Amino acid sequence: MNIRKVIFLFGIAVILFIIIIVSSLFGSSKKEKETLPATPTPPPFVSYTPQIKSSPTLLPDTQPQGAEKTDELYMRTYTPDIYLANKTPYTGLTFSITRTFKTEPVEHFAFIVTRTGNAQSFQVDAVSWIRSQGLTQKQIDALDIEYR
Image 1 (tube, rainbow, N blue to C red):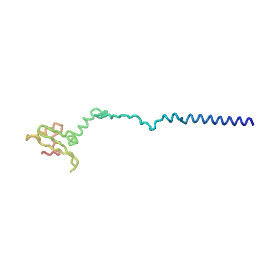
Image 2 (image 1 turned 30 degrees about the vertical axis):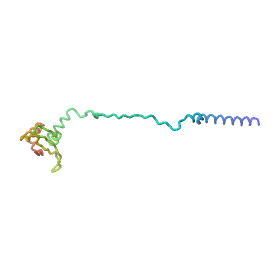
Image 3 (image 1 turned 45 degrees about the horizontal axis):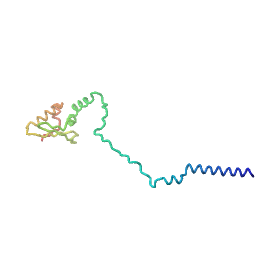
Image 4 (image 1 turned 120 degrees about the vertical axis):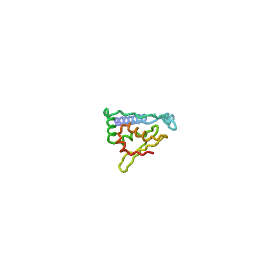
């Protein structure tokens, strides 16, 4: 019977030891409870200043060398209205030229030439400017141009 009492007492001692270890690891003492603030403190304010960029980051040109000139030559030769639309609006000394898009009878760009001064030659000056952009007289005659 003596051994039973020793084992029993040893078991109780082990259980008490485990309880003390567990409570010290996971429990908190009265001292810790007294030092905790009544309300949690908010995290410190982090200021964020956005960066404003004045211009976008440009991507590198991936077209082969001379592709822009080839495209321009193609448009000037086969679609002179699109070519000239890319050059407008333009204001000269005696005229200004703007573009508009029409869907009748077929989709195309039309141009409005407006006199900006007292010069009577504004039509001639406008045609001279169009010719200086590389269009032929035949192409100019085929364009939808309105003079005002």
